Length: 249
Image 1 (cartoon, rainbow, N blue to C red):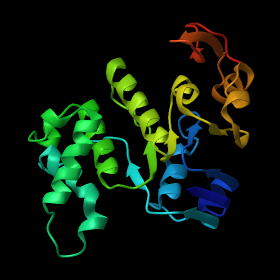
Image 2 (cartoon, rainbow, N blue to C red):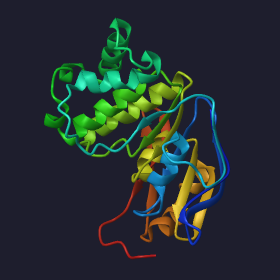
Image 3 (cartoon, rainbow, N blue to C red):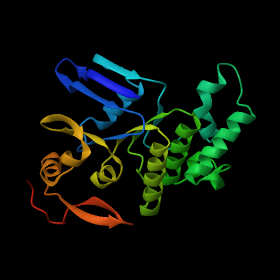
Image 4 (cartoon, one colour):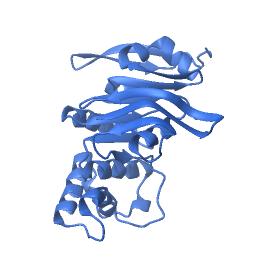
């Protein structure tokens, strides 16, 4: 369970990224954070995960969040398995080494994400997409029921984007809570129960269905956006299209 109440963060009293923001992420649900570049999505998810302290209000978590940052490479030549084992830090304790249970949890997480074959590869030698999958596995290995993910599909091709979206939906079915920032409204339509829209006019929160509509998305991104209905093996869904050459709003 994650809850923000009257939360605000700014780099100065004249430069607030967001203010008086309240929403919750109950167990077994997904909240997606959307907005254009520079709108504060990463700052918000870092505050939610405890990486940054809010300047006002409160952030409450039922447990330590598993945090998945955007993959940006690494200068440390650790094997991928060791990177995933780092997600077990809160279970290992200070001045102790990872044990067989920690390595087993890390290997299970890698297998769950579909990257068990990368266990012995050095992290810097992996592609950006592979590094992103390692970071997701690291968060899962920690065993938290709350995951905060900053653009988890960064660097992934279409096949791996589908893999990650299906994995996240599977995690939610087991009762996990997810807060996910994304540049892809169609990913939010696929995953989210609720959304946080961060735009030039401020922040809006609410149910995903009404807020991920043509008018709201067009206003958020400043370009005409349309949603299309489609059938997913008998389940009705919507996706987002933005025609090339679309007029600005």
